[in-house]
Image 1 (cartoon, rainbow, N blue to C red):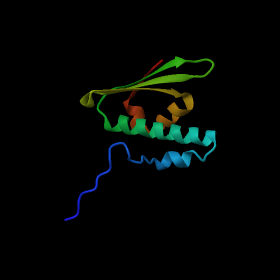
Image 2 (image 1 turned 60 degrees about the horizontal axis):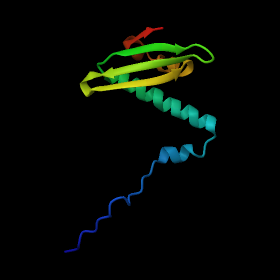
Image 3 (image 1 turned 60 degrees about the vertical axis):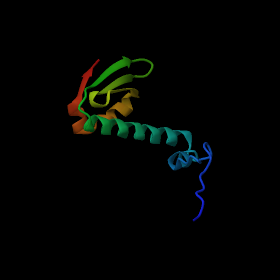
Image 4 (image 1 turned 135 degrees about the horizontal axis):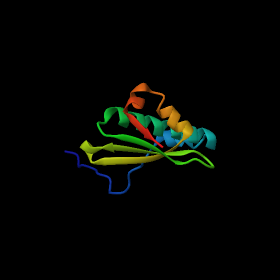
Length: 105
C-alpha cells in the first residue's frame, strides 16, 4: 500500500485565469470587462431572487451615480452597488430586470 502524500497547509497555488488574461489588456478594456461582469452578476441575482430592488440617484454632478440596493431575504443578504448611468442602462436593458426594479430619485 502506498503512503498518502498530502500537501502542507498554505502551499496551494491559486489560479484565476480570467484575471491573468485581463492583466494583459489595456486599462480601458479591463474596466469594460469588469463592468460587464458586475452587471451580469447583478442581473442574475435580480432575476433569481425574490427580494426587493431599489435604485436611487445619489450624485448628479460632476457624474451621475446611482445606488442599487438588492435584498435577498431568503439568504439573509443585502448587496449595495454604485453604478454610473451607462452601467445602469446596460442593467435595465433586459425587460425581466426592469419589471423588478422600483426606481426612485
